[in-house]
Image (tube, rainbow, N blue to C red; front, side, top):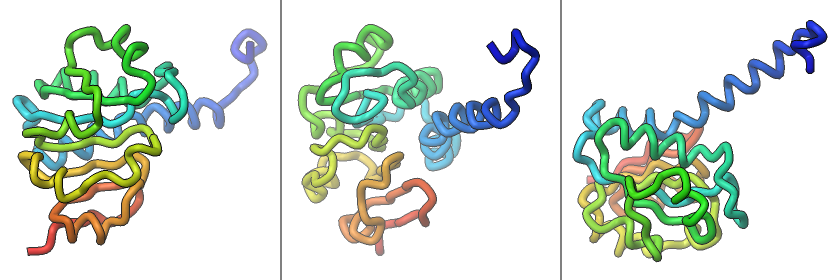
Length: 168
């Protein structure tokens, strides 16, 4: 409507552009950790819904992440407590759908957390560390304490905080 009336919405357009850039942030973090070599990597994704407590995947950053990972040649496994079926309409059989969150982690090179579901808040970190091929968590929701994850042996990359790495 603003365009039809020749009204400038520069601030709104800048906000929209920033929101679209944010959707690629987790992919860029993963790409940086693997030095641009995502082909053949296995990445687990927790959360497909736009927000927790819904099955709505419209505008979901998870779909942007998954599409970018697939385009880069990664194998993607996904879990979401409610949005699996709606996500399947977009992703089809190009990803593996897990019934339990931990199922995406066996042999995974990384875990990306996209939606802030309650069940992702207190996972079994020692078990996760044991079954993952590489202990990398990229967290778009800042669910965990970086120092705690480092003590469990993870490299933990969250938003707006320092990178936490496992102590030697």
